[in-house]
Length: 320
Ligand SMILES: *Cc1c(COP(=O)(O)O)cnc(C)c1O
Image (tube, rainbow, N blue to C red; front, top):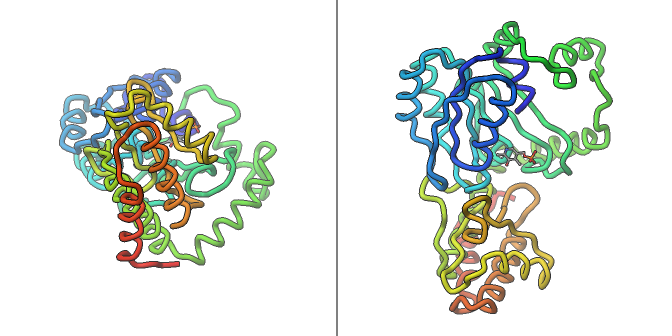
């Protein structure tokens, strides 16, 4: 994210930040840290961004040089409409379309060239199923051209240095060799499986998880498009301390789920299903969650959520 800003933008450039959660907020902080002028489109947490509002803000601020947003806002579990946002940006301005796809790439379709995305960013630790430590950045020809205007100080995140080193088949600095070896294997496996199968696999896990959670009498947090990377749900009213759900899952079952962030700490929790997960993982998580919720005071009929998830798996097509 930082490399994109420091290489493709110039100091005092105006940017539009779509802020629908913790990671949208981070775009705003990053932009400010590097002397850019962010215009913030605040999206209510849980909602997807509205392309009409993006259009309105682009018209109000014709100097905007880039639109920064998430494909998948991990803090809320919501997908933003990437294709539609890219369309209104192209129609109304020359701004770069910069997509943090860190929990979207490898989960849902993001055809960069077809949709006119100028920068697509991801990392090793989410759908690529590796430890943290690698970040990926793809730039369109337009974003490559924009690099010529760049005057933001940087050193390690220098694409110029990387380009130069790449001429000799090298990297500018010492790379995380072990992770790159891991990535090589992951990408081969992903290529063998095929992208459509990977996307429908994630959708299948996400659908079953959503149905399972609803089956337990929980309410999904997403009001916008619920993403296939992570599902966020409200802590049920019978459980006053939402954080207990997270710690009980960890202590009793060794299962990690995530809580809410900021104002939603203790109010929502999040279940991931991107990358190295399968049907049995989701059934296990949901089963453990039923026991945990019941133990903490949420009235539910054991097996109901797991049953809904199992039914969903039975009905949806398996792609291996
Ligand atoms: C995980 C993630 C990042 C990277 O955050 P780190 O704190 O560096 O792990 C950025 N954007 C999104 C949407 C993410 O989910």
